[in-house]
Amino acid sequence: MTKSEKAKYVINTLERIYPNVPIPLDHTDSYTLLVAVLLSAQCTDERVNQITPKLFAKANTPENMILLSIDEIREIIKPCGLSPSKSKAIWNLSSIIINEHNGEVPQSFEALEKLPGVGHKTASVVMSQAFGVPAFPIDTHIHRLMFRWGLSSGKSVEQTEKDAKRLFPKEKWNKLHLQIIFYGREYSPARGLNLEKDIIFRTIGRKSELKKYEALALKKATK
Image (tube, rainbow, N blue to C red; front, side, top):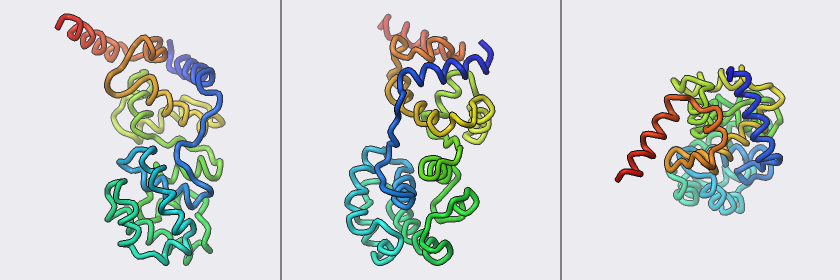
């Protein structure tokens, strides 16, 4: 299969498995999504969804957030990890949103990426999921699967994003990146891969990766 044929196969397969995909992080608007995505760095979505109700019960707007101290924010979000830097970023970006953006989350990549604690991936998630602007946020699952499927070199997240945007139609990006994440979690994990369940890898996988899997399976079988 050519890369474009593989891309079509991925789209069709994922559309069949996940015709509807929810946004993994619970939120009510662009601000709560921004905070939730920031908290999700090196933390599971499940853990973030356990913590944000406690935080948003106290402050779900930039105006209310800056009424809390950084220490108060840090105490609430501690289970998410990296709480000292995340609490400062949440307080400071809330202040900037109030003072420079009239209390509204900015709707551009450039403005979002200037906010404390907000990198390109976080900005892409907010632009995609809050504002409906085509974006292809690359998380660990997408980066792994794009390489595993032979659609990207795996050299860097930046390269994976370029390849994804080149191979997949722009109108598919916002839904497709979520479909790939769900598929990676359910059928194609980094460890404990089951080739019988992973139809995409089995069908279009990079030959060298399939050989690695087969060698590992053989090793386990002969133990």
